[in-house]
Amino acid sequence: MLTIGFIGAGNMAQAMIKGWSGNQEIQQVVYSPHVGQKVADDLHIEAKSSALEVWLASDLVVLATPPDQLAAVARELQPGILIKPSVIVASVLGGISLEQLHKALGNTVVVTRTLPNVNVAVKYGYTALAFDEQVDADIKGAVAALFLELGRTDELTEEQFGAASAIAGSGPAFVAAFTEAFKEAGIAKGLDEEVAAKLAEQTVAGTAQHMTQAKKAPLDLANEVMTPGGSTAAGFDALTQGGLNQLVLDTITATMAKNAEFE
Image 1 (cartoon, rainbow, N blue to C red):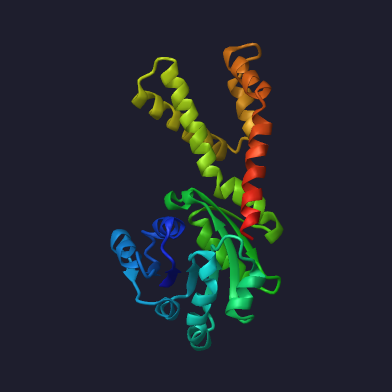
Image 2: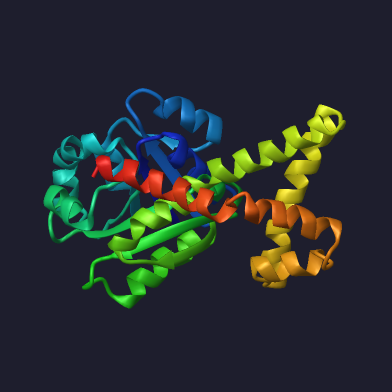
């Protein structure tokens, strides 16, 4: 039985807990001073009374506190690190580098930076991973296998985390906004609100599944749907002439710039 412990119980931690729930080989525990017990009750896992208790009970600890709490949490964990140095740390702390994590936790702790998105809750998420150079392949493989259960995962450099965060981390909000725009367009063209919402959601979800399962590139699928000179092509032309690619690039650029302010 593998025990995964969460220090912090915010939205991302809860999404990960939901994603790993149901796996009979994984036990999960959580500590948060304010909402830990409620989250544990809601998600049917065990609450611990301190960060140190989570460390001592776990094989892998997910650090999911606000980034400015890292130093305080690290001080509390020092006795546990001495007693049980084998625990692997997976950090979801935004903007906190591997170097900063080691400065807080010590150089002997095996640490990985993780960048999951909220879709891990339904096992269809994306998680970027970054490791120290000295982490061996077996540990990398074990950590990657855990996150593969939550969707797709890739090992990236820390320098690539900014773009990955803007696209995968913030991206669900942007895709949701596009879905809402679909819904509003349907309503404007005479559809009932409930029908428009279901139509938009199913179209976005189904298209994503189609690309994934059939292993089709986005433009390949688009070209299959379009007939030259047809109605879909007319709408596609309106998207491209309206500057969709530049709008998305501007969106990602703005997101990355804001993220950089917190680093």
